[in-house]
Image 1 (cartoon, rainbow, N blue to C red):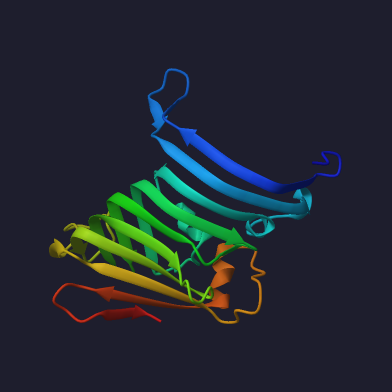
Image 2 (tube, rainbow, N blue to C red; image 1 turned 90 degrees about the vertical axis):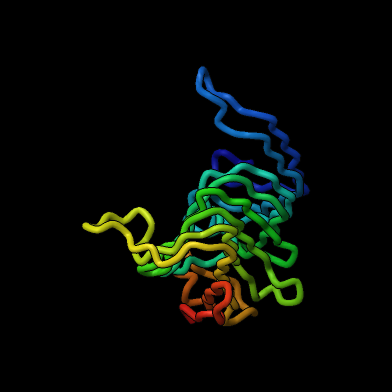
Length: 222
């Protein structure tokens, strides 16, 4: 590390972190048991010349993780955002994440066991418990999937939490609803140059499908 020039580099780095619990001052425990194990490489770069998503393109990471999560914001690391789809939830994240050049690579396979899982698709809201899965196609790194699987679910006409005079209209309650967001790079031979997450939308084709038990899949966005 060159502090005067603001340059940083790390070669042959390894990660091995295990936490049973963490408490700050007299507060209640702020995290549960967690572990991260893997390798990290950071080629030389200048902090002052790097911003936004450029930070994610600097290093290479290959790690097995088992972490408590309070939100699903981390999904932006591996999947481009879809404005019509919003996700929230918390509990536990497990699996393997492989990143290089700001992109998720072959081997990435993550699962969130989520409680208080909520998904908004335009004017429709879905809430319950279930799983969120993120994986890169092992045969084609240019394609990835985000799958939301509800164990139990309630569907509403308005997004969950939105106030209205009569309250949200409940459409149905049940089990087994699945939403799948498929992402495919438009040009797999190039590396993303986006600085903001929203700019990634111009570099990928997205297709969102919704499957309700006993009904054929519904294509919501393509």
